[in-house]
Image: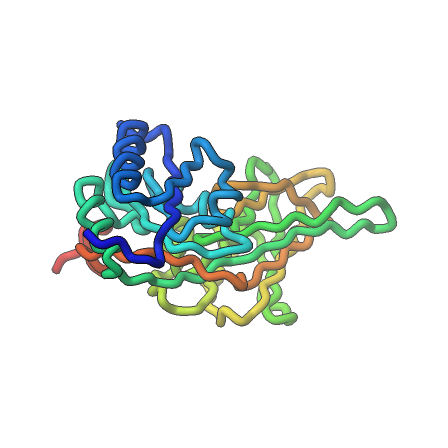
Length: 286
């Protein structure tokens, strides 16, 4: 097999909680080293350093492993191969038994990369004359979620789109999702399925008290601003990015969500398509 000259450094990220993950990781390392490739294993090298050097990344685990990696790809985008150790995922399209056949195609230059929208979110706090907390920033491939997280009283959510008030409602929270994330939490909350090649942002209310309120699909060029009002100022809510990182928010918090400058680069499986994965995951009739 002739190795593509554009790929020299290969990163590996493994979910150690998956069955046989450690053996799969070791076997993959040996396979790559035998082909004179430089292996950058997150087990041995900090993920930030690995991302700065890798030409290709292989994720061994499930969709959550890819989401963790996507949140770290703030400065540099690297093509990612998602290998599912377990059941088929939306992002980890490659099954374990297909791994080495897929890698042979990739290293011979026969592969397709699909670019996916990422969301950038910032959280800042209005000081109201007092000391302000430092701004927090996140990146997400699936979604940014604001929810009550144990609040017993109501929460009012205000959503501005492009600087204009879009809606204000009472409910359990709101999901701001990418097309990739449209098949995740947003879908379970009643949101639409949006093809991942599109450049849209999906805004899905979580259990809104107004039954007429529906999800919104807006242009990826729009800026989304969210503020919440709890029944009591001391009560808190939670913001999460891809379920991987979170921050406590309150009445002083201002959340701004925009399309990230980066795009996530997902290496497509040669064995199945997006619609094929949809059919398999949702058991749709052919």
